[in-house]
Image (cartoon, rainbow, N blue to C red):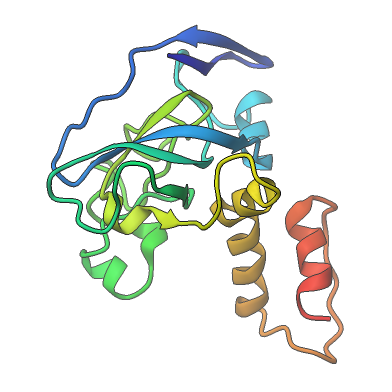
Length: 197
């Protein structure tokens, strides 16, 4: 399969990689239909975050389920899904507390895991034709419609931009009538401008 890999500061390349295979009965394989480039991917590209050469990048991912493990009851082949950028098990102490960004199960080196990002576990990114989805029941959000329809780009925002902006407004207790200063002109900042007005 074709994938985008990190080759060094200001250098990425298209690379042929093996198609992922199920490693666990709780896994799924996603055929990627849409991905995004996150501002945090630019930290890697600009050399501000160390990443091993040859790593498949990308953590804003959606597509159609190509294959599921035998222990995945809620997702089936052909389902259209979006993946959150962080990978979580759904059953560890932190996941039960709602702190899925700090999952204790998915990364052998530290709390928290993500697709194709420095220090976030052994997972390949989604700038590829296919991606392995661990704990598919917990990490796949089913979507309506069909790939390539009018909502494709909007649904991709559920992978990172929308939840990041929403979480920021929740942490800051933003509500109608409050005055808020937003620093940054990216999509998260733009979402914040309209979210609570």
